[in-house]
Image 1 (cartoon, rainbow, N blue to C red):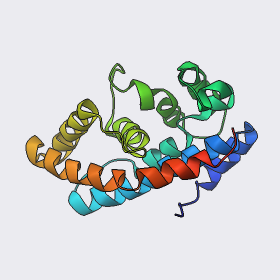
Image 2 (image 1 turned 30 degrees about the horizontal axis):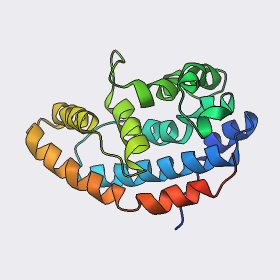
Image 3 (image 1 turned 180 degrees about the vertical axis):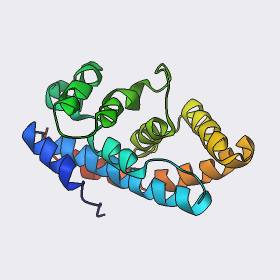
Length: 181
């Protein structure tokens, strides 16, 4: 299985912070899923307006905090969510992109959550075949607000998209696991 390359600016930042091969592999698969997701969104809702570049860079850098909290590469933890935005704010990326390092995991409790935040969170969840009904319902609601279509119709299509994205989860998990921490 092959994956799309991370954006050059993401690779530069990951190198700057000395990202472990496992982290780069994880970000690669989440970015690849986000790329496919954005294509499927375009196919399903061509009128849907959002910042695609933000979603792709957000998915490519959402776990940047794990460069400082490497134990969270193989175990649970939330410290990376605290430090991640600070690391991204210290780069030349647009300030708005730093939020993805926090919102990818805290979208439920984050004030002013955006469609872009939810798309990054969704890509970071579905890459491993995990389904989150609350996230998918929230995402359907966001898309409904942007497209003025019925939420249930959007949810039905989003369910198909999630199923398609989850299909290759085992291969992604195996590929990521081949990389050292």
